[in-house]
Length: 399
Ligand SMILES: Cc1ncc(COP(=O)(O)O)c(C=O)c1O
Image 1 (tube, rainbow, N blue to C red):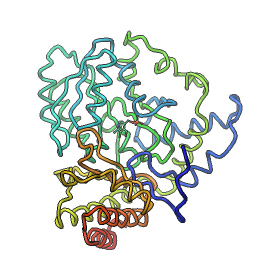
Image 2 (cartoon, rainbow, N blue to C red):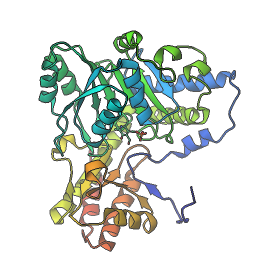
Image 3 (cartoon, rainbow, N blue to C red):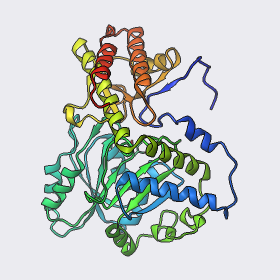
Image 4 (cartoon, helix red, strand yellow):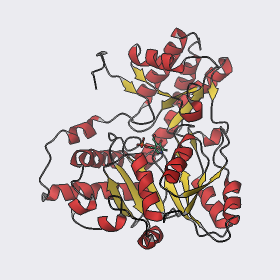
């Protein structure tokens, strides 16, 4: 990748993934690999497994780490849980539920979808109905995206669990926590969720390239009976104390060292404090977006305030506005990288990530840069968003 021209001071990466990587994580990765028999490698892997279990509030989920990204983790659950031709229910959340559905179908499985209602979280009544419409229990699992990073909406996992239970259907609950773990509380055992999957580059503050699945005993038993041919992704082959086997080959040591350091930072700050910080920063961004929407043509994509995620906010723009030009101005002139709209929101929205290694300074800098870039591109929001964000941070009782 060519170097970006140097801007004095720090560039802010306010995209919802990859997210900024803390200096401590970078430092942990700046070291030579070790030999495969070095106990430090086992300790690093064990620290990642323990860090995931702690954040997931799971006593004994099997943790499988992969040298892959979120799409790889999606493939992991498809190949391990679903026999060829089997069915899965994927409730509509927008771009990411649809992408997961398309990938699942490409792998030769059947997908039942519940409709996506743009701007709204998962329709739980539609889950119950779809499962009631499956009296022969052909649907093996419900694949639910917790926070859809494209829409900025978080769905209520407890309500999804209740919707499955209300149908009296044995489908497993598989949760995509790519954009939620490390940002908001997720209690795998208490829900219960049978599988939770995620990736390194968002709330876990580690560069892209590492993904994982946490698997409970019920899901492991389903995988055990699944005749689908598989190898690299196969949980059964990875059940080994040997790191070479756990990774089906050489472990991605550098990323593991980074992720272990990220878990240390989360433990140091405290899980509750990490989540409270995410809520506080999200409220500040939402206060700014509220001001922008009152002043004119920008708006929240997420209609229901309670569903707006603590990780990312999707902001709609007027018809004809060149979002990518505004993002380029924000990045190249004001030093802040934002994300564009995805899927159906391409060209119609931009997104501010407020997850992972962010603080009040990066959020205020980001909002100021957005206001400046909007003004350069012809939308004058008058500084009111930034002022409301300051008010929100000052007034915030969360600490
Ligand atoms: C919720 C969610 N799931 C899955 C993915 C896919 O992850 P990756 O881009 O690492 O393949 C993303 C990516 O942003 C995501 O936000």
